[in-house]
Figure 1: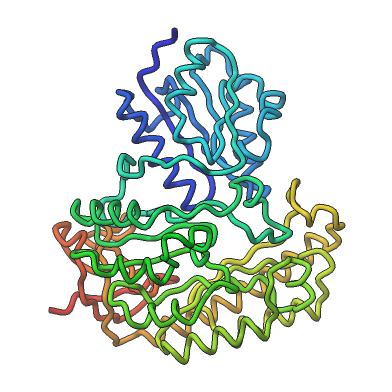
Figure 2: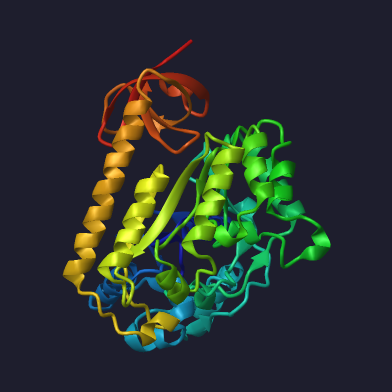
Length: 439
């Protein structure tokens, strides 16, 4: 049996993947392995992959493929994450040098899989379609000591036509409120000041477990009572499930940050139907206006896809105008790329790459202008900042974020890391606000 003493994990994709990496790292450390920063020093290599966009998948496939062409490579190699669930055992055909494939719903079984690989020297595939096993989140190895991600629901039932998540992570499965509260209490006792609740659709939390009588807003009210917890964030949301009760919670709960990710995806009713988003622009705008009426200080973020199959110039202008009207605090914009295994793959990708890029650049430029105006409006104001770390770009400067997700740097000493400070904003550079601590 090969003696595995060290491991290296490369993470691709979203915050959920980052949390899964922390969990796997904790499991391997408890096993007695040592985590290394250089893959060349590792006896075990794990690639925690993403399939949401073609580029992330191609990067992972290219990286792992190059390892197979290296001579004198004796490390055990495993593929985890969404690509593992999407491709399953077919990965062994494309990457014959890998030793195991472990799906997103199977990371609890990492040590057993590693034992089997080492004992039998055969390739192992574990890729269940549904999440059914509790994970030891308390054993996760977290590098950040100020902020922590906490998973509350895995999987997705929405089946947007462009998205692989329902097929790679399976149906929605909510975690018990008790286990979430226990984890957050433990993190808070260990000095964490901010938690971000994670799920493919956090707003669906509790709908699959009516016996708990705990929906998402109920969970937030319970978490807000935990002593020492300064900030709560959450992502990602689906507009169809953003409720009045959630809007009210954002307004009323002191720990709940007033930044909410509220993905539009398109401003065209026809494209939204084609995406299977389950709302139209009017319904979306009605919720935006309701949210701003309930809590005028709320800041919204969004995701938008340009160049979806058959999107016309006029339909793109609808999206452009929606962004212009809503004035998001943060926007993540993407050019559509077809993904195998999604319903949208049956439609011709008929928008040229050139047109997609023109639309993408126009939208990005508009958001940059909006963000610049918002930063200008913050000059000579005082904001609450959670001090996260020392700025690597500026000497003697600390870095943190406002409650509404704005980056801020300011002079200070390392002993302030992990504290909340009131910072007066006097200027900005690119996307970053610059200020000074106010006593």
